[in-house]
Length: 147
View 1 (cartoon, rainbow, N blue to C red):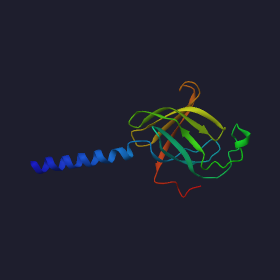
View 2 (cartoon, rainbow, N blue to C red):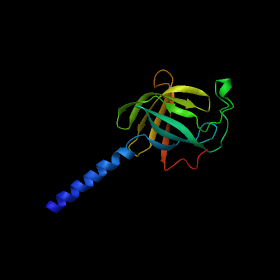
View 3 (cartoon, rainbow, N blue to C red):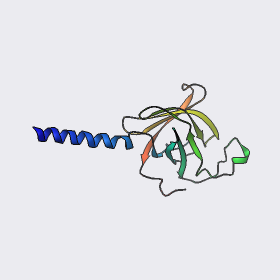
């Protein structure tokens, strides 16, 4: 009986130690295809007490031509900070951030959370969350070779 208890405790401890790495939003995420058919990998990482994300791979590299700031229209999309300023609400849940949408060149309020199946639900919106658009991002093992 002691062997069974010890084995159970060892499994629980191993599982508990493994959860933080996969139970939060940090890592590489493959976005859904954009309205223009492009796809990105965003690396989400801590920025102080916040979470930020930078585009580290793009299926069809191009300039930020839709940016509302004319001075930024010629910059490459790779390396652009796509999300930021998130506040952690609970494990795997973040709010009060922003998301940049390369398809229209605008920045929106945003929130994100891990889904039960380990994907990342990301919602960008104007004013209140009711007026917005959502995507499900899937975890990537890396940045697919960079930009």
